[in-house]
Image (cartoon, rainbow, N blue to C red; front, side, top):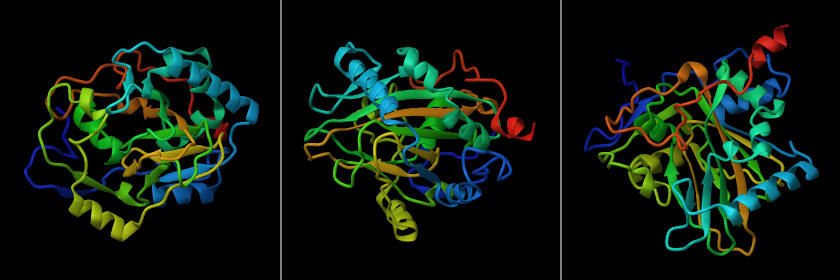
Length: 303
């Protein structure tokens, strides 16, 4: 049985645990897609924002595909609506629903960086499109993705990352993703037992697995808050344990982002550390957890 190095939801009192895993698992300077300065920034801050990665034509195609899903997706477990309305908040498992997105997960501009940071072949742990509609897009409270992936999915180590491709301009006004830079170095052990099928509520409004206000305040006082904003076609890469959240969108400007979560093949899921049944495969890939391609960036760069 694996040792649980990041115990959470098992105590009545929250606590902060020092990170024991590397942030970048490979040596710096071995990936031609980014600079050593980019690597240093990511290692220190837990995120990296790359502007204008995709062309206008590419973004237009991705946006059409996302809008098609938003307008045609049936109401099922893989389509999440906003709390209190029928507005679609997220569509999951999009790389299995679209040939365009299926090809995109292997795009060199994305996967080479993921393979380099994680120093392994990678597979898609989760994919989704997030929509924050004009006037109606609701907030998502502060959280670490890894806390949920570890506790509810059984992800053993902090060896995963998210890539968010902006399909619309992300401004300071339309509910952009906010991050606490440097928070990835600490793990907040949360209180509260995980309910059965918690995902059915948490995907609309997460309550279990969120940091307490005291520790969250300490994190913000130490590290601050930042909201990377920029044009569509940019890519926000953030480490699996970086605390993040977003506020309501009360502007006339909708926001949408395509999310791919890459996990190291060596970090495949085990039994959830909560002791509960695992979440469905559309949220946490267990079946078909195969590399998106063969050979990671470090090996390719050395050849």
